[in-house]
Length: 197
Image (cartoon, rainbow, N blue to C red; front, top):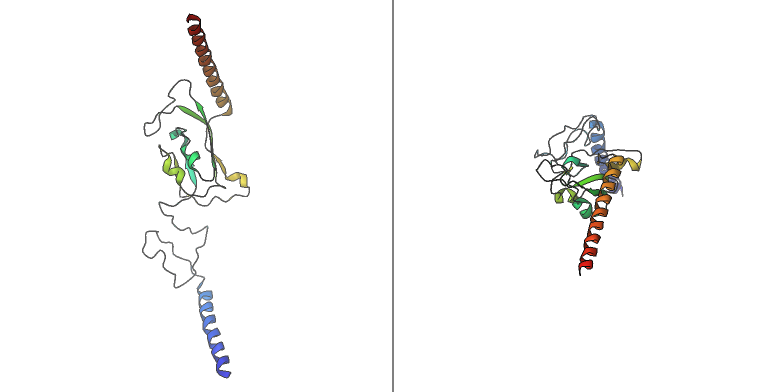
């Protein structure tokens, strides 16, 4: 019985010595090393295992999946990103141009649609990266920004469209007028054809 008690005390002392060793060594700061370093995942022998955030930040990998960003000038409003999103966090509205091409993207693709609305709800986003893969103009990317702390959930809804609501309403009206003119011309042609027959 005495042996068991002594064994219990020595085991507890050994465990506490490890705890106290880390406790008093934890005043040292962790050295921030690059992700590509071979010792990146090595356990720290001395000092604390944590970094002093936000004063120290770990480097992020180049292929990390973090906050989404959209270069709206390169967007052709193809809607592929919204269609492939498994959680429907991307909302896009498009208006067809009545004048043909409205410009070009940085890779030379023609833009035929206006984007009055391009919203991403990062509260829903699961950071899968599928939207960045399917984008033909690579206008939607994942940045290396991972700290987007907000107090209100609605602040995680990012709006990337730069079109004013008045401009969007004008473009919608122009498109409706053009479609109505085409429909009227089509009906007139059909009536004329029936009249000749």
